[in-house]
Length: 253
Image (cartoon, rainbow, N blue to C red; front, side, top):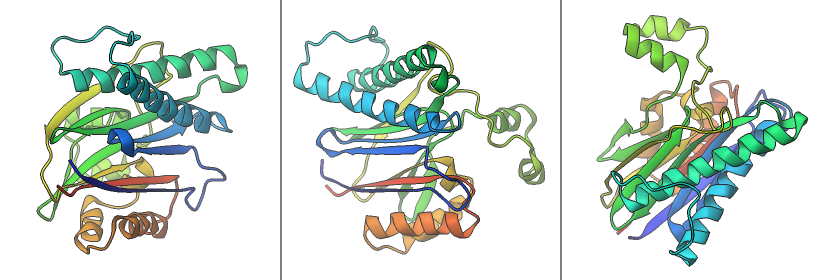
């Protein structure tokens, strides 16, 4: 399974520092975006800790398949799904423990979204409101569901587009790493086709430009680095009120 990938992060136009983190772990076909929160430097600490912990877990389990995992496997899930979920849960535990030890880090947390490609299948794990999209045959589809207060209201009350636009708590998330000592991880998988492009992003992108604007940029073609830059430029041109992080992964073979 041959992949081509690119990733970029940008502080945006309004923030003083960047609390997002990303990791392109190409040796394992693992790609991660995390959007930290907590103010000062603690959001950056949480997001960086999450991507490093997950990458470290994948490296360790690749080198030694007999290694003891920190959580039991769910027998109802595939091995690859368990691997993603366990790595994310381990990240959550380390963030939560670090915040408990250090008063300066109290309240820190992060979203996380992960794609892992193996044997023609894309495995997707996530917590929070960072997203994964799939661009296929010229159409963009959101694959993850936001763990946000807005999304909960949409499901309960079927808000109109006008009500969604006026919703006062758009940035409130209801699930993130570090909030509790345990976390529920959403996991899914789907066949990946040649030509598919998977887009991972923080809400600094999805909250600033529409899905159709993203699709338009991807339809324009060009290499993945240029498309990442164009997506970030679009978010900044729309106001750039948050940090912006983007990873693009294309299935080449």
